[in-house]
Length: 124
Image (cartoon, rainbow, N blue to C red; front, side):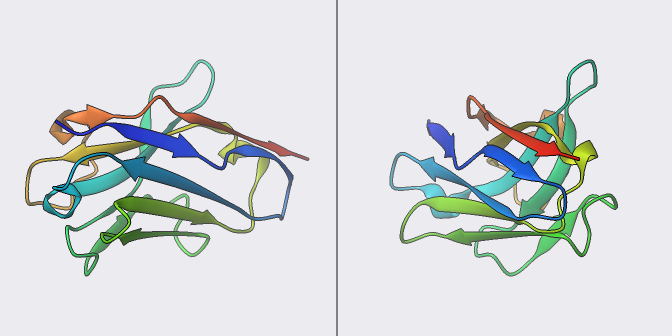
């Protein structure tokens, strides 16, 4: 079992940057593939980015490629999402999730543990 707590959300103007973090409990953080997802009002939850257990492989949604960067620090049991050139359409609740599988997947059903989410609002 792992518990995930997101932080770092907030209000930012379009074109700005924000970094959200997700701290995990437990000593086995390095055994999980980690992902970031988001859900805007009235929309389904969607994948944003995912990262392999050691951080060597990443996967991004087309809508964020070149703007967002996922990274992890296994010594700190934390995964990050650096968001640059933010757009109003990036406004959503951002969730981190942990998968016990080995694949750097963007499929929601592959993730076993979820955080409570952090709100990111981008004003125009």
